Image (cartoon, rainbow, N blue to C red; front, side, top):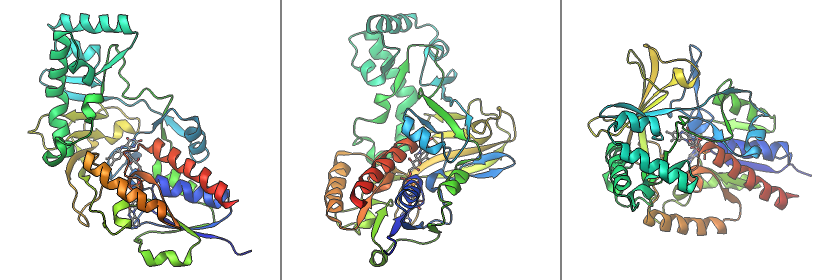
Length: 374
Ligand code: FAD
């Protein structure tokens, strides 16, 4: 019986996990193409004097999923890493999520807020509260505090992240769902598993793709006429691009990542800037993310979100508005009618996925593929 051949478009987590599963479990041949000159998609990194540098920004792995953790652990060892983020406010740097230490530093005279938060914790048993809930609180001081957080930590940041054009339309805007910790907890994530791949993300991808049944072709962009020679296809590029934008263009945000050695000492692996006068949203220190400590001469990444312009820059973040949900729904209907092609990933599904969610979604898609193929 002739071996079945698959075309997988995009060598990010989505495409690479599916390539690995389809070749290893089903024994099918896979041609994996990517229009970029490297594998690993946005998680791509390279080593510079022992430091892992991400040209598409820092990537921090965290998950609660045993399935994702056990799956990835077949391809990498891990370096334990607990991520911390700080944000610049008028009185200095505070922890994000904002915690009780942040409150003491930023608003030292507001004992009323501290007491109201502690009372909330006592009554509800919850060790955090969202900014959204603070803004709707019946307590005057907590409502004021919600407004203060919005103005001093999130409004300017969100404006830079999403751009004026989309800010008003953003669905249930991101900042209003962020938690305020009613504790001294400083970890940015609380997931069960938090670690970085010991030899970097790109190495992990080499391990995922090492089967002789997988052929990788970089610098190769998808076109519809490629489908002919294949049994089936998985597309992980932008959903609207696959259908030649027939329902209109979906909105994305792009970014410029400027990476340079700097004498500036950054006091946390990532520092966010709400201030509109600062052109970037955050500075990341690859040395600290690779396990080093803050020092002068670190490798820093200055992240400046910009408008996405097709064929000029990369679509990084799907912009989720009512209208974009409607249009992506139209594309999803078309996707269901495709006889050969399945869609996966952040761009292929127009979803705001973290790495672990993308991997889980690819593994779930593979479960479906396996049922159909055997
Ligand atoms: P991608 O990694 O984008 O891969 C898709 C690939 O398809 C790309 O390589 C692209 O070149 C290729 N492609 C597109 N169109 C075509 C075409 N027509 N022909 C051929 N190839 C094509 N997640 C976390 O868990 N932790 C983090 O700290 C984190 N930080 C992030 C920081 C930034 C700045 C960004 C943008 C994302 C971050 N993420 C993070 C999210 C993470 O990057 C994604 O979840 C993950 O990379 C998505 O994998 P994917 O395979 O769906 O997409």
